[in-house]
Length: 306
Length: 306
View 1 (cartoon, one colour):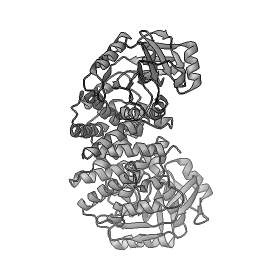
View 2 (view 1 turned 90 degrees about the vertical axis):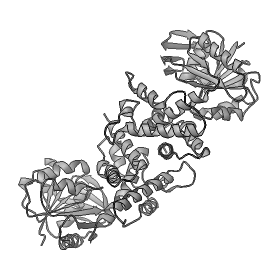
View 3 (view 1 turned 120 degrees about the vertical axis):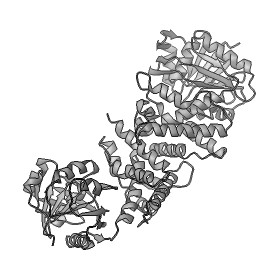
View 4 (view 1 turned 180 degrees about the vertical axis):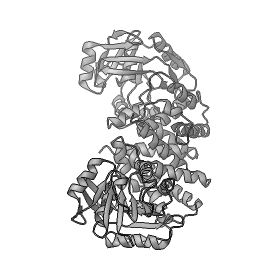
């Protein structure tokens, strides 16, 4: 039974997990910055938006200062994954470790640092972090979890049940890859195009009238992604083009994280998203000229910061 | 014999022509803004850099205020071409009109407004405009001119000779398309990539080591451009990839105009450059996935301004 959970990385997603899980378990938070941990210990973690409460959490910036949890949820950004996984090495030997990063390949990076049973997660929640101790819960969409390697499915179901008890939406899937790949193709396309054009995810992404219309490119990128998925033997859970059309029909346009990153001159998550897709294409011998172009352009955009 | 020249559009290139031609002919300048014309009439046009002199020019913002020239040189940016050509309609019936815009298709736009004999020009000069009456001449590279439709080659040779007399480098070519297309492919590639990545034309554009390296994309874009040229029956004057490698080896990285445009949130020249190349590909039945993607991304970047 899961009685104590440690969330690693307290951005939007990590904060939403930590606060909600505090209502049904002991909730620990491993932060990157000392002052972030201090603020959480002092003020708790406030949630507004879809839900409204303040949770009590135990936070630290060093792993050794935290008690042993039953479950670790790694919710860093791509750039924080390697340092986080290496900090966990040799610790929390009795825990199951679940990753909920964007893209593909996070589990493999964690695996290099320890032999915990691993669970793959993909989340569609969204929110806004207003301060170190206040997160707004905006989209209360699902978290899907599935086993990685030989982790028993019962463990995965237990985690999904815990998230649901905590007031979040979650589902356990025997094979997460169809969902993970749907989101991978969607994100590689939408995040890459947004980062390069400066457009939030708005109606331009679905426009397919004139030859210059962006929707044609988005559609071509999605189709190329589907060919890569097929070559990798993955049947998609959702059609990324339909996900795109649906999302652009919502009221306010979502501001993709990769666009926020390039505007703030921060490293993006392109390696785990577009880069991962391009490497899968290579591995399975599929041509991927458009995703490769997008990947190289985003990498070049990062190179322009200095 | 060419005794009076009217330059339309007094940006960097127009100013360089107007000032130099004033040393061998009467030099008129048609400006967009009244105050620009007033400043030129009052102070003349100063050239620094490769040459150093101040030229006397006669400027106006209205065509009817200028006397009839023998030669009109249209040197606006793409966005200024249609208004400039429509202002010339019905005027200067005895003149030859030469266009020196980037890209492809400027002659056709001018043709819709009058039946002047037309001359195609492409220039590799560069400079910096320090004020309405001061332009710095930086790269003293050539202007190439060629006949458009049935303009006699003798007229083209006369224009090239006049430019050389004026202290500029120029050459008359019986067929300008090989040079025009070399520059078109170069510009569609380098300007598009720079506008999207924020990189000036630096060594990243020639880097071809790792899979993520930008030079691979630049090379693929050039190769795609060459296939379009071949389908259009054009043998290139220069290899755009070699132009690219050579340019990135110069001391300081050139800041492509399309990058300046997107950073200032101005309309770019993409329709006459990338857009023209994509339309040529369509016309000749050649696939152009990468240039089409670049074109759509730059158009979307323009759409993000508002």
